[in-house]
Image (spheres, rainbow, N blue to C red):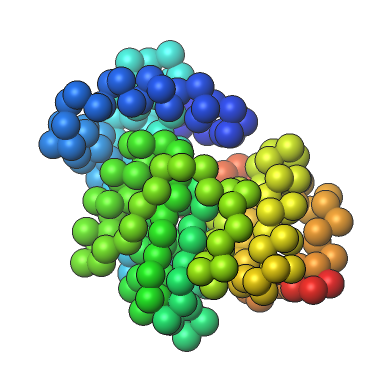
Length: 247
């Protein structure tokens, strides 16, 4: 059974950011890099084998760890490739011209797969945004593993309005009703003000399925999840990519 993975991510992250800062600030990037590499493996065994990622897999000791075990990472959500992120990244790789030359913001970037894929397809500039400091370093390592560079930011950019972002990515971010509502308000305002392209990867989570925003979403892709992804996310079988439209 994997480490902690379906609880309210937003609240948990707020609680442990300060802990992460104190734990890793004085240890240096070398120590953090070593921890990430020691407790993950570089794998392509997912729906986007073009992208190599440092992930916790069945071969890693943390795969079977429990929440109260002595893990070096408080909540390593970045070390798992969530189904919404997988299908969104698959869509990016399958449609490179949609992202080529664009300026991309990837919110809740996690392992950074979607951000890396955008850079691989020729995006002009990519900003991977995650509030977890360990995720930021993992994104940088994953970008390097694929021979690209992406910018990173730990500030919470969800809610900020920036006309320079031509594309905003949300991979598996609709896991909670309250957070969903804030994302909907933000992205609809982005679209209204700047006609920002907003792409959402989601495996059919109820907070998105049950929201009126679905009337403004156009399905641009549908993928059957891989066998491994189905096994890791019990009850989910299909992933969808949606694009925000006028409605």
